[in-house]
Image 1 (cartoon, rainbow, N blue to C red):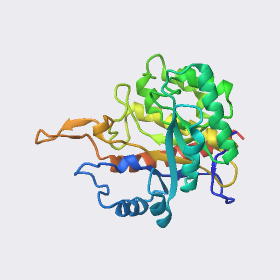
Image 2: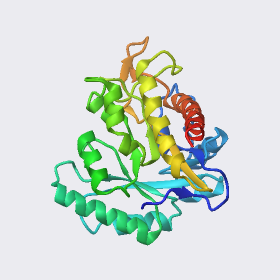
Image 3: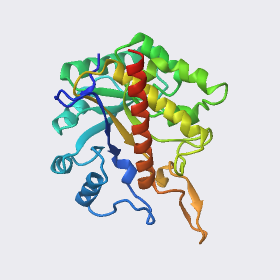
Image 4: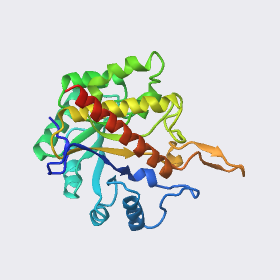
Length: 293
């Protein structure tokens, strides 16, 4: 089984509120987020209360007492060990992976996933396969079937790809939430991005009175429950807002009062709201797991 991230202490299992480096990349001028040197940005992340960075500078993360996690992409057999070793040598506590392009046969997928799991176990290094478009996990049916074949698999949940890409409200959100329960039980890392049924990254304002926000709360709460049910002392789950910039077609562009196209919201401020929501979801998950013991 792929291990949970663990800090080596006897702490009660907890939520580690990190941020993805993409979330502060190319922030617009109006953003309140950091835009200085790499060191100034890492210091600002620490000052904002985040506990770690995915894709940050390992040396600066260590300097400012921030956790560090990595990532990568694996398309072929024989690639994963070098990716994992590079990240582990840099001090990463775990990595998240895009795996394949979504056009592979089940036989090839099984070989890739088997190699990832074996490498994770051999290196004693958590490797979490991401739910993402244009990968082997691009649809919910195939991913649930993958869990049946590899129950020891663990995931990085990036649910906007499914929520919007598969239009999960069409045909009944609750039915689909129940269908993916085997995946949610195995989520050990979260890329937080909230979409609506038509767009996969939208500004959520204060996070209130938007039905699609409630759906993402359900994703996150059930993922936290899955983690907590088997978590051991020192285990933690990383929650990473990953609101990406407009030039890669994530942040939507709208016209401001001057007629200029600008990002519709401040991704830095939105990340703070996401983190607050995640803390509420984690508390709810703790109460649910305690009640059902």
